[in-house]
Length: 103
Image (cartoon, rainbow, N blue to C red; front, top):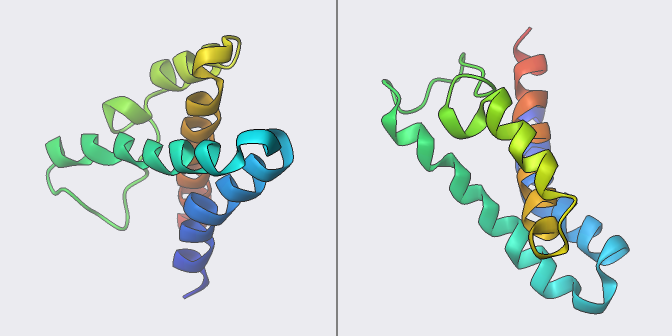
């Protein structure tokens, strides 16, 4: 019961906190951009089944792969992609916590 609360808090509230602390002058815009990175979950649509509560998303779905995560980390070094990168990495962290929760 606690897992979905933590999961969705990390997807929606944690980006707000990060936006407020690190992007204060434009925190609302940063928060919305980070929330929009949830679109990375569109890669779940090509899985069969689309959703499985017992499946770890990390390194299963293409946009959740280690290669993709490395690219998201690289995006941190460019000012124009930094907010998107933070959102994507927070998303991967959240999904990674789900993987740990399943153990």
